[in-house]
Image (cartoon, rainbow, N blue to C red):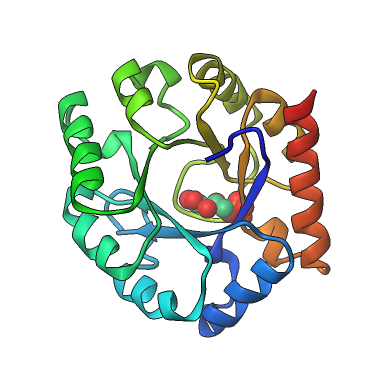
Length: 227
Ligand SMILES: O=C(CO)[C@H](O)[C@H](O)COP(=O)(O)O
């Protein structure tokens, strides 16, 4: 995975669920790199969204990279269901795990039992230092939330960017994703801090010109990365 290249992962949370496969493929044709799947269980966050059955239904209809962000308690229970459903990336929350050992064990299990890439996510109140060096060197990606997880359409938390910069300094070769309130206006700062993967829901799916929105976010992330 090349972290010097800007990627845009539109959040399917903001698409029309009745046309999930159509919306997914259309946004890929318009330049999106990945499809971001927001999995919420109504316990870890106060919302209930997509589960493995939906991912399994979508899988045969798209070749898109399914970047699954699990906002769930007990993420270890979801490894087999998401692997069987055809997820490409299993990204779980640090806050959902009781200890560093349990996180490292879960990462190893995903690697041993599946072909999925693995990521770790931190919520706004969790410092970058909560991700130990062992965890940081074991994952393919870190996601720094730039809103409180649970809902699309919230305002971007610019004060999360120093966390991105700290993580980028600790692992220059890592994929770093930002999620929440990312738009053509906020993307440059994300790239400048060191994030190379932008999740964007409302800024893409609610845009009049979705292609332009994807292209602009990607261009702005890349401009920040290149500076
Ligand atoms: O993880 C999420 C919410 O928990 C969503 O991916 C995120 O909020 C994207 O939506 P938007 O770009 O509209 O903020």
